[in-house]
Image 1 (cartoon, helix red, strand yellow):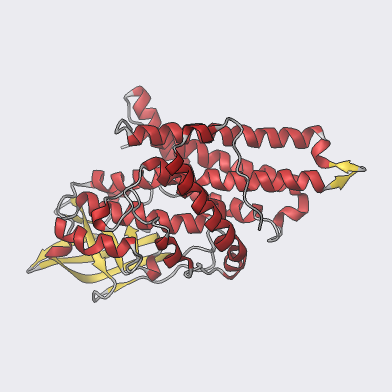
Image 2 (image 1 turned 90 degrees about the vertical axis):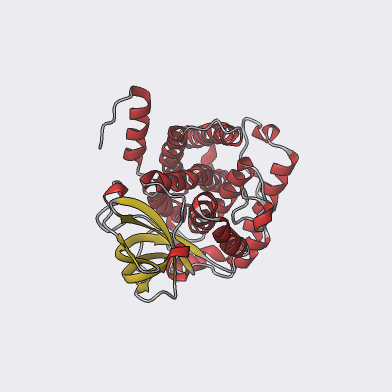
Length: 389
C-alpha cells in the first residue's frame, strides 16, 4: 500500500514537535502495513485481530503517557492523541482496544491504585502480557452510571461482588476487569481477575457495528475479591468519570482518523469516477460535499490540538473534553455519510472503508457519553444550572 498522505489543510503539522510527528508517523505506517490489509476480513467475520496486540505493545502504545518506571513510554498527551487518530484510521475497534487498555484500565490503576498494585499490573498491561477491561455500564444504567446496582459487600479478607455489566470492550479476552460497585452506597473500584470464582464474561454477538471489536457482558455472582484488589484511592462516582474523561479525549482524536480515511477515499474516487464524460469531482455538488468534509476535519484537528495543549499544560476542564467528543463524533458520522454518497452504490462494498467506518461511528458517538449527555454537561457548565440529576 502507498503511504497515507494525511489531511492537513491548515498546516497543523507545524504545531507538532519532531517527536510527536515521529510517533504519529510510526503508527501511521503500522496501520497502513499491518491493520488495513486484514481489517475488512476481520470485520466481516466479526473477529478482533488479536495478532495485532503484541505488535501494538512493541510500539509502546499502551499507557504511553504513564511513567517509564512502570514500563510505559511517558510521552505527552499530544502524542497519545495522534496515536489514537492513526489507529482509528484503521478501525474504531483497534483504537477502542488501545483506548480501553490505556485510559480505562491502566489509568485508574495508576491514579487510584496502591504502589504495590501499580508495580504488579502496569508493566504487564504495558507489554500486553495482561489484557484489561472496564466495567461501569450496566444493563439498566448507561447514561446514569450513578444508579448502578452492582454491589460490594465487606467480608473477611475482602469483598463479595454481585451484579452485571454490559457493552464491555475487550471483556471476553481480558485477564482483569476494573469493576465499579457500590459499597455502603459509595462507588468504589475493584480489580477483578478472570480466574475468580463466579466471574464470567460472555461475548455479545450479532452486532452491526464495531464488528472487529470484542464486546462482552460481565457477570459477577458472589465473586470474592481480596482486600489487595480494591483500588484504595477511589472516591465515589467522580473517580469512574475521571477515567471516562481520559477515554473521551482519545475518542475526540480517534474519530478524526476515520474522517481523514473517508475523505481521502471519496476524493480519490471522485477523481476517477467518470459520469457524463467527466470525473464526478468536477461537479458542483460533489465539490460541495468534499469541501464540507474538509471543513469539518480541519475544525476537529484544531479543536484536538488545543485540547491536548490544555491537557499537557494541566489547564484542562472536563467540559472542554465533552465539547470535542460531542462535535467530532457528530461530524465524523456526517463525513462518513457524505463519503458514502460520493461513492454511490460502491460505497457499501467492503472494497472501500467508508461503510465500515460509518457503522462503527454510530457506536463511537454513543459510548463514553452520548451526544445528548455531553450537551447537558456543556449546558450546565455555561449556565451553572444542571438540567439533569
